[in-house]
Image (cartoon, rainbow, N blue to C red):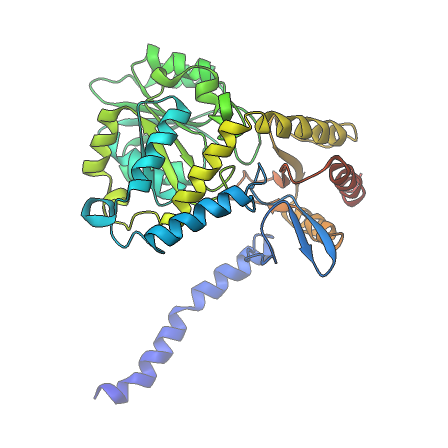
Length: 400
């Protein structure tokens, strides 16, 4: 009976997938098709077939992904503890390296405690729903990263968006939606990943305190670049006590993989008891812990790395702006060049790739409709000559 029905069932499955092709066709028409970009190497400079390729599409900001010290730290951890933690943190997966890295991260951020997660995305999903629930309110910058937005939606709290980097609009919305016994949480990034601009953290922290709201700040792209020894903008502005929770990743300036939060010891204990993406997943592997520890040691020994990168970025940005290119309010190592049209952004990126210059073409829904852009992600691997070469190529590639 079942064998006779099988051909019809297979045909039925094929018919049920028609909608997938339709969606793919719609995305292609709008210039929104995505595909994995395979590269021969990682880092800001890729050497392939005797070519020196400038990679402005990665996040190895401090050029640490191939640093001998990080590799040695990863190797040592791998040899001592093996390839994986082999269990979740609350079963038998917590290694001395997990606790060492959490202690070092908390010290770096000048906060009481830290907790590791498997990735930055898992960090947001595992924290926001345990700060607020369906009875509460979230006030989120309109351009927060997808992981924070998904964490907010998962919480079930009422989501209220405020204008990007606009404390006046945030204040208006806080006044418009009083607590009335509900918890309120403000979400922002300290350095926005697609615009490269900086949040007005002191003003936002002031509003949070004045309105008895919690504040969560994503420092993923600021870590290693801003603040004392690259500790981030929260520490730079001495806002640790005004910030309920700081989150970040180990995958950008620290050149590894994983996520973390920093906050009070009480908050850490609360998340250990409740955070599903912490409790129900295997602990981060030893080699990645060693990598992160090595990166923090580099930051302590060379505290000016971020400053050097920001100086390079200022030179690059000024050169682009002098030719009338729109870099928005970038004030960091991330420099957007707004193109507008999705197809044109892809065409320009493809033209640059032919010249051995890799620049991401960022399109909706990652950025708002009509703001497709090239996203330059500068690293310390890029020399001044590299920057000048890229500037000339970009100016030639973008229609005047």
